[in-house]
Image 1 (spheres, rainbow, N blue to C red):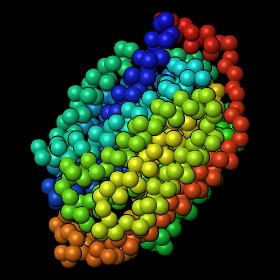
Image 2 (cartoon, rainbow, N blue to C red):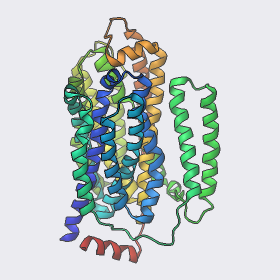
Image 3 (cartoon, rainbow, N blue to C red):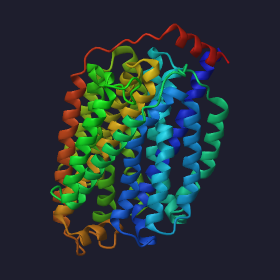
Image 4 (cartoon, helix red, strand yellow):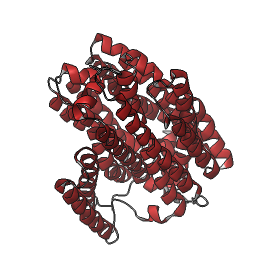
Length: 488
């Protein structure tokens, strides 16, 4: 009975953390135009409050996942919750756009500590045959946050954008204390293992150079000398990283995870899906508030169909994957998501809101069919002592795809209209035909959604190519340690 109780307790702790982090990001997203005006900062700074956060998360989660496999997940997860809460207070008192950006980058460290451990904590607590269901419930709660976030953000903006961060503080305190007192370490750790500092340093520097090159290339041009230099540095460092990981006794990233077909294609599908959907919400905020002239509150409500559809589908898709497998379910989900993106490819300034709601709902339905089963395949396809790095690598792939998506789509949009027109569009100072090159912007938007459509089909293809699931057996010591932890 205690075993049964603990797995749901663990799920409640990680779900609260997911709710916390997603709610924070989705409320902030809808408030960016208001923050930009209030702090009198540039569009690049407010854009980087989103992209910089994802950049730090992408770089840190694999090494944090590896660290958790060594020292345990609970202490890192609780520490991440506490840090995220503290930095929410700092964000709320930021006086300049640059201060807000710095505090958000620090906040990303707390987010990485939570995200890198939450999925692994659930995988440790639930038996493999119930993992899809558990992750489906987790995905449903994330969708609730994604639905509520923009709406709540639109409401809080009327009070003041700083209240978006104020509201995080009580939630963060409750979540930190709940996790500190209720979570248990269910995985045996080895005292003999050493942390791979050389591999971690090389990987972090290489990923920083690569992701910075991708984001700068989207805004400054791909032939910029700094962008080219960063790409060269990234390639050299990442090649060196692979060499290090193949030679050290305790690597940060066990490259065998990428040699297993089902895992390699699951990670690839995760990355490509990130590219396909990463910029969609960001672009629709431009469209609703700029082209349509809709206020933030209503814009937040109009963004909800995507997450609502995901919320409805995710628990069922997780349950179905436990019974019938992942391959077909996740691949069909990505094709359905592509259908929704195909509808957005023909968007115009006069497109009825009802039509956009339909396409967003279809896209959300497909994403809901993909996420929980694919995550279950990854977490159920690795041994217990590799779940931290597997969870970190999954998050890294998703975030890297989203960073690339925003960078490429913003490059497409910025090439279609002047920087001044785009900034005016973003803050809503000029709407529709009042001075903005609406036709050029819509053309760029269609091109961006077309690219997202192509990547969604590629993700579906990669998902379908996965092979049969891998079965990893737990050692006798791991089984005994897990049983002892959940009983206590």
